[in-house]
Length: 356
Ligand code: UDP
Image (tube, protein in one colour):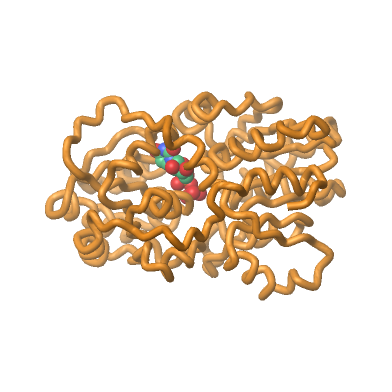
């Protein structure tokens, strides 16, 4: 059975790393990987293949930038060519990026069944491009690998229970990755920080593309750096460009995006996580750190319910107040809502036809 895996963005490399290893345990499965090129800088792409020992993609496209429509359209054209040549029995897509949607749409139109890893997540904010990508990808998938009970519930609420598809709660593949690679964490070169610090990431379009929000976030980050603890911010290229355009001074410790192993080190050693990322919210929990989320909504709602995530939006006062209250707090992870590191094996066994 030939599986065509489609990836393109940083979080997908982290997710595919563990699933690819699990698929490789089945000799009857042959995985072929396509990388759309959505993320292409060495520190946003190839470093993940090197560190996580992901085989080089058989098909590396060069599609990035432009509007959402343009990027997704160009991906669809090229992905269709690859799919027609490869003739896979199944397509495997991850998460919620334009690469996910392009792969899922092309596959379904060629009558190739689609498996979606991280199915059923909803922020209920349709202004987020990721939300549209998730909803549409779920609609055309026949294997919906859900990380949590909430994800299953979301799909049931949308009527998936009466469709001829499989909705399976398998756990979260990012927890598999965190557990697998945690002991290989590397201190980022050039980080001279001695004491406790706040680890921040910031790249969601709703924050970077709105100058008022971005300005308030910069103010909040500066206040935390001044009043609570040094803030270390590996800066996403999109955010760096947006801050340069805005011209507002950011005084925190900015570094280039780091590899996954360096990110694990930062997660292990920080006193608080401050983010607008989807994946990093969960990673904070995996490492028992409180997370302050700089968004109005989250698709990882169980973390808010567990008190492990404080969803504060983009007000500078709310962010700095939440950081000051939560810095250094250890999160209780007893609830173990993400499956405990068995998701990739379950996914591979379902794809191979052995059941979950
Ligand atoms: N990440 C990384 N280096 C960084 C920032 C993030 O390795 O400088 C990792 C992070 O630990 C997580 C993944 O990239 O595993 C999340 O990606 P991102 O926040 O870009 O995407 P999202 O989860 O928001 O879709």
